[in-house]
Amino acid sequence: MINFNEAITILNNLNIQTLGVEKRFILDTDNRILAEDIIAKENSPAYLTSSMDGYAIKYSDQKLKTLKVIDKLPAGSFKEFNLQNGEAIKLYTGSIVPKGADSVIPIELVEFKDNQITINQEVKEGFSIRNIGENFTKNEILIKRGSKIGFAEIGVMASLNIAEVLIYKKPTLSVISTGSEILGLCDKETNPSQIRSSNNYTISAIAKRYGATILNMGVIKDDRENIEKYLNLALESSDIVVTTGGVSVGDFDFVKEIVKSKGELIFDRVNMKPGQHIKIVKVGNKLILALPGFAYSSTITFLLFGLYLIQKMQGSEFKFKTIKAILKEPFIKRSKKTEFSTCNVEYIDNNYYINFKDKKVGSSAILTNMLGKNLGLIVSNPNDESKNIGDSVEVILID
Image (tube, rainbow, N blue to C red; front, side, top):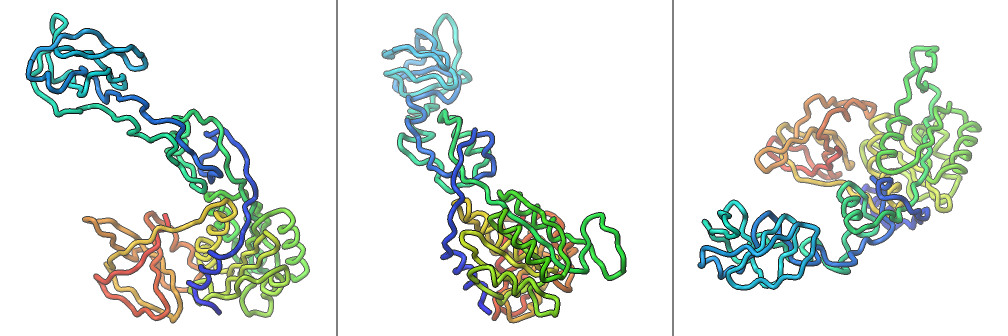
């Protein structure tokens, strides 16, 4: 059994190839991973421009109090000017500042009459002028390859007149839930020991949010031949195969031996709670992620390991945001393992605080502990002790 930090180091060093790239219209790239650097081909703005409606003037001319308005220059128009002493030109937001001008005085600070302005309040030199390259400069890398695309990235690409962009292809992820006691949605219950499958739906929802195409292969009973059959089908049709259940030490836990026979075992069991029986196997450039069957356990291990694999196949890396937070309730350390405990996160007066309202203590099956907004996972190391109110803890932000 390896420790959690070793497992993460192994993943960081694991050679996982991307699945190639494709070109898409920018509006179809939201939440996808960029496969090329986005580089500015020119300065923006390319000229000095006005950031508000006003009058282009020479800063030193404000002492004259009255200036002659010789013309106006609407945004989007261009005309050669060379402003002389005692002159002003009316500008609008986005207008190019004419030569000779070094400041823009807002219309609110002047009175206009008979083609003249009277200055009621002076401005500082350079006021309301956007410098060349304020947005970005020529040859500047604005968005790096491997970045996740969102609304800001789409807007920046549009501002560069980029209509199509290269993105990494999505990995296909298959999910197989195993267990003779597991029922699929709408399956008829035949005895009171049966439970409904949630793992395949929870994991599918998470994986879809982070860029995978999903193949939900349903529930497979604890039958060695059938499990191997569906695992082979999943390997043929997907890039990542996730199984839940059958990885512990029970008589019917067939998954652990079947997955280990398929390729290179990356690691087998991690000293963590929940999820110590997790296994990762590499089959060529495909990966099998074998997770425990308890719902909370499989969810946490998929968040910690599965998202990393999905992002890696798309030329990027997944990193949770980690913060330091202050306990509003005591925290009880329950094992000599790296523990991940669900909590609620609050931000009050420039500090993060956590509490355990509606978070139940029990087995690794309590998926309802993942309900709610502003969720976090307290990370406690194997040698950590229990904590008191006011103590600081490390927290991974989930939502």
